[in-house]
Image (cartoon, rainbow, N blue to C red):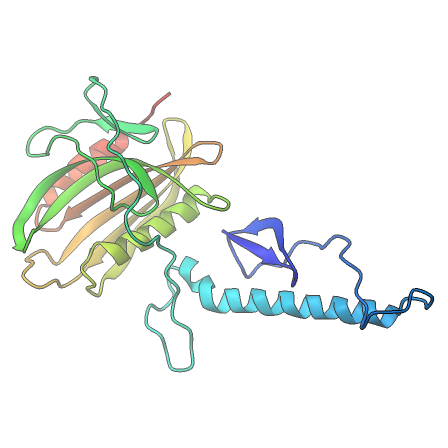
Amino acid sequence: MYRYWTGTEWTSAITANPATTPPPAGPGPQYDSYPTDPQQPRRKAGWWIGGVAALVALGMVIWLVTQGIGNAFNPTATETPVPGGNPTRNVCPEGQSPSVEPPQAADGRVHGGKISFPQLADPWSTPYGDNRVPFARDVAQQTVTVEPNYAPDASWVASILVAELYAGDGFFSPEQGAEIVMKCVVGRFYSDAVVDRQDLVSKQLTVDGHDAWVIESQLSFDIENLQTKGELAIVVIIDTGVESASLFYASIPDTVPDLVDDARWALDNLRVDA
């Protein structure tokens, strides 16, 4: 989310789109063009000159944010800087998420954040945590190893996970959250390879009576020593309370298409925990 800058301070108003018109400003401070003698009347010209300066500063900040950061929320924005242009800013958090593997209840379900899905049988692993998921904590996942040791200390897996999302100043709608998380996943998990993302589905849905948004994308890439050249990625953001959201994520390599049914079954059986 973005805050508006008046030229002297940040306002309390926030927005997901920095190109929107700023909210009406309340009474602002009075400005003089220079210090005045207490015996002399205040100069009205100084007030409007200061006001114009503040508006110009506000306009410049909004223009810079729109030009430099607005593309981060635009799934069609180019990822490659063009001569004379601005590169897309990275909205993803740096480093690892402060995630602790959530305790699992003995109810046959995989719990992460405020949601859960029925635990999948072999060949899926037992549930375990992960602290690499952008914006997420309390991550629990099941995986299937698809290409073991394709690189030193690295194996390629199919995965299905659930987690809680955290946010900083302000929050986001399920639609905005789904786009941000998908963008971050594409930028983080593919060894700096060029990834071609083709969205197949982007729509509203309801999960256990809660508003949610799903994005399904076909990802294509070419990573050294990896036979897998693409996979289906599914991101679902569920509104699970006031300033709270949960994440369902699945990535199924094209080399194991039979596992897509497991991912869809887990999604269809998601439950919001009390």
